[in-house]
Image (cartoon, rainbow over all chains, first blue to last red):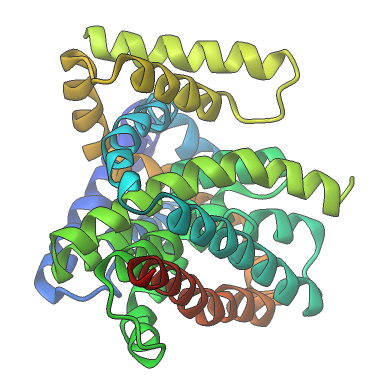
Length: 233
Length: 113
């Protein structure tokens, strides 16, 4: 009976949709940042697979109808990036400097801390793209020799943690300018940060969306270059 | 469907360029190419606008299957738990105030001058 369900070509789609629906339900009831739907859904799917004794490869192959669209969706990110790019004219040079300094700082600090605490090359490659939006992070981690799964989870944890800590950190640093608050949230906490920024106001939200899109594109270009230079082989 | 065709054509173009030795993932090159075309056109064609917003609505769902791969990574997570936590949280604690401070300072300084 169970084998019939598990071996069905739509099993992966079924489990993923069940996990996502339950996670969305939980997120809407609790209304906290901590119940990030994709993170919760991932844990539900993992639990279901362990329960039904299905290995990851079997699940992944039968969920191909979902992840095959990740490529076109990544290309589609150009559309929101183009739309938000209009905002960059407001403060072109300050935004460019903040983007490069903030982007470099995040990557170098992450790799530095992890390296000092003994992380190996595969883990470092999975941590490097953690402040980039997930679809791009997955591709980058794979290219750098890391684990796409770890990268995806690290991105989500970063988003949640960043959105939880940012209001307090921004308060302590005395940041009141909506553009600075929004841009920082988008750069450091991508989707979760952008959602939080939108709650603060339209301008904050717009700069967060701009930062999230820009960080994705700029990191995608620079990370393989920097990584090749600082971590040969 | 024209919008989806455009996206897939750009992805294939990206994959071809990656195959020529550009050190970037194919879909990322496709995204950058599409961005360049949009910047030249100065508008988003309607089919592309519609397909993109529909497709991106499903993006969270698409991220679940790759993320489920952590089930074969427990060993790394448990053995490097401290390194991972410090790296993820420590970098945020420094880079959030730093990014915001730089931007606020540059913007207010320019407004004053």
